[in-house]
Length: 287
Image (cartoon, rainbow, N blue to C red; front, top):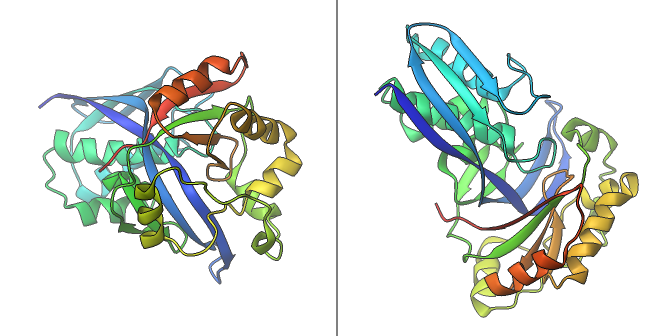
């Protein structure tokens, strides 16, 4: 095998609680990660030596600062594989939007090189490699629906979330995850004004009651909306076009709205006229 073309999916957070700061400087979190259909494409070509990365996004780095490159270098070093890879990243997931695009790219490279180079790594071994790169990477190794705890690297697979249609909106704004954690007031996160999910079908309610306790909130939402009012505007817009539940994903800037069915989601999408924002109709994906 000399070439692979792989989908590198985005994710949303169905609830994200920041529980406190740990002794190692990271934060303890609890979140439900859900894969969605929105995805980048990665083209992997086997070459004699080295790592080459190209991308259609003009602002993304093409070196160690890019998680796809970092993943390729890490797996090459850990396995001592002598060959190389040429990577082309066709970027469709918004950068800095809380949709996990960079982590997904890293996971996709790990899985792809395991196949392309015939390394024979197990799922657990790939997830351990991913955890060295970033907290969300182990989730994207397996995908689907999962509960993430610790700093986000401890993954417990959950029963698949019922297939759901949603609209993702990313304002023309990138939000740094490190900024969000630095400015988060943990004493206030227990008093978030976020509304709980209004589940339109009994199937959703039964699913949620099995995997989550308490109110389904995102601890970053109030902070991000206060600092960046356009995120609040995007949330309000989704509510106005009929979303049954709207939430921030990750630490933003993306928000998503869940709809009863595809027809309602398509109708809502047709009513959204923002021309400078990323607006995407998509659905959840099972593992």
